[in-house]
Amino acid sequence: MSAAPADAIDEKNAANDWNSALYLKFEAERTRAARDLLAHVPYCETRRVFDLGCGPGNSTRLLAMSFPGADIIGIDKSDNMLSVARACTPTATFIKEDIAHWRPSEPADLIFANAALHFLPDHRGLMTRLLSYLRPGGRLAVQMPNNTHELSHAAMRMVAADGPWAPRLLPVAKSIMVLGPIEEYYNLLAPFCSTIDIWQTVYLHPLDGPDGVVEWFEGSGLRPFLDLLDVNERVEFLTRYRGRLAQAYPRQPDGKVLLRYPRLFFALQK
Image (cartoon, rainbow, N blue to C red; front, side, top):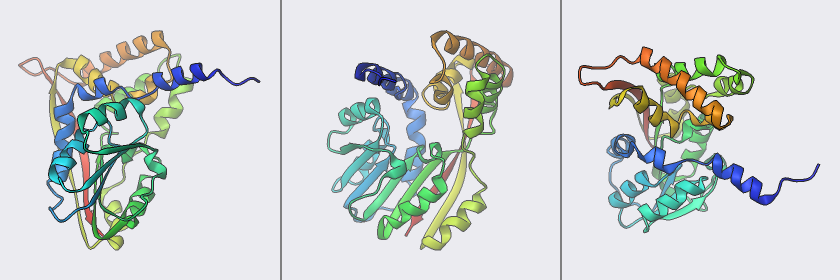
């Protein structure tokens, strides 16, 4: 069998790449969690800071402002996100790399990962490896959405299972990473830490009805499903998803719906 032409491969990769415009439509809400995480990282002399899964650079910009004398390095595998990140924070260095296999060339002072590690199948093992990449006294700060059991995600799975696309999408639904109980993470990480702070915050985001919820997740949680569908299937999938969201999220008196969004935080010191 002959190989696909390079331009066809590039077109497919581009189609499945992250969409920074969709992601940044809710930049303030997404950056809020990064601010809350960074607020739990005490200021200290810091030379090398890594932002894993930096996306469009909104979290990298926060790190550059907080540690002006440090080398700030953003790591991501999306060309689209990295091009936006470079424009967002030109003083930082950005590298295209899969964070699942990333390893720094020398020990880090701070490794920051905002809404990135939960996409990886072995985020627990990765977190222990990241701690080993820190200098003594270095810090690891991680935030992961913990919304697999929320109505928004239950609706995704139900639509995936109820349609002509089910054979393709059900394996995706079953492979979505579920975060464990907080005690599990504490027992896993405590042996490697001198201090450990773990907490969960439930954010409530007022959005413009079901369409607002769809727009939110088109830039994140819906991507694994939509990437496997053609244009017409995507339209039908999102129509069915909107219908389920309308039932799950009643409108408030002002017309908004409230999207519950739990996030799990870790602020660790080696």
